[in-house]
Image (cartoon, rainbow over all chains, first blue to last red; front, side, top):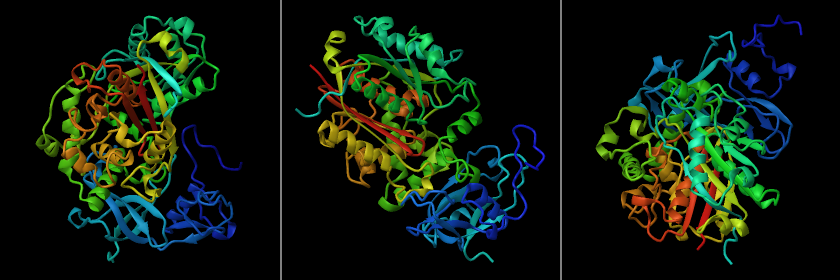
Length: 153
Length: 391
């Protein structure tokens, strides 16, 4: 391994540009590296066509290990939500904040923070994804994604 | 004959649930085991108990892993095999199932099974962090989804789909606090009103503080034997006649249906089938009310009512002590307390007490068939057992 090892308990983000041409493995790490490029990427099972998000090695539906990367539009509708008032330290400065499950246009679902005014929250609200760069050098140094109203400029 | 006995409970014990200051897991578990052993005078624990299965969720609370041999030592059972089972809040429900399978295998005549968790010595923020580990880390926790908010997501969906109200959820808490007042071992010993629940501070709306089970310390312990040996140890054994367990995705977001817990439905279906039972035959049930919405969903998943009717079932007082099917006579997780690893076996303890007529002021007259429903995390594990009194 050519990388200098970080001290125990920390983690070197694979970093650099993740490149589709290099056929990255269908892993959580790849998923978040793509998020770092503001891309929502999943894999589509070549056997049953299920869209797997986050990507996985084995399709939970049909068991196939053949899949290809697909870029998702990142738009969808709010299936359900909650407004959080008590949160762990990382998120406490945001309270009260909304979270929800978003049903994406391509069929997969994602949980996440919903940055809309509380009075606008309703099941069925049209949303789109947005990204925030990573702030941590220690594990996990993943970027974060969140959702905003679909009509946000 | 309907529902052949798989294994039989010949004794049960439970520690006080609540804030047990200055006591750690091994000591709290000793209290539960002591009660279980003393309740069964014909048992010689050192001679008769051939294996121990114990549920505990997290080593983070006490900085102590490898709990099973230590707990076994503390209750005087060395050197029998002792194994810890972990399926988050369903740990000791799953441990009970392992104990039943161990008896059914023929390898052991008699085993002990229990659970324990010591939680109250840590800050609320530490406890919530450890409990959140039962949900998905990379997608849920990392993206701001707290553990209570996962159940709040189910609640919003249930309200939207079926018209369930926050008041109906509050009625679950009110009922379970009323039951808890009749159980000297329960953490919460006071009645509350719907108004108090509604006005309690928001945690993850629509769930408020009094919709959530408390942080508690506690332990539970059962003695299980082969059905044909049961009468040797107890005048009235309780036969376990059905067991079911199922798994689902760790993340709520990956499930097709968030108004029900598939693991509850599947585990119940297995247990009912094995016991040749229907939901109508159940006299009492202990269900996993970690949050009030979870009890409403449990009614539906267990077939006590149709999907969407759970709110109405509690509102019409059908699940009160005096109702058609009393649920959580112990006070449930909400009022008895929820020391997570202890919960599943503690539910079985309550059913044992009820079916053997030892439930004192909360006794349901003539109860002969009981059910327990234990859920891990947000529904990635579900364990259901069905019990019958043997006269």
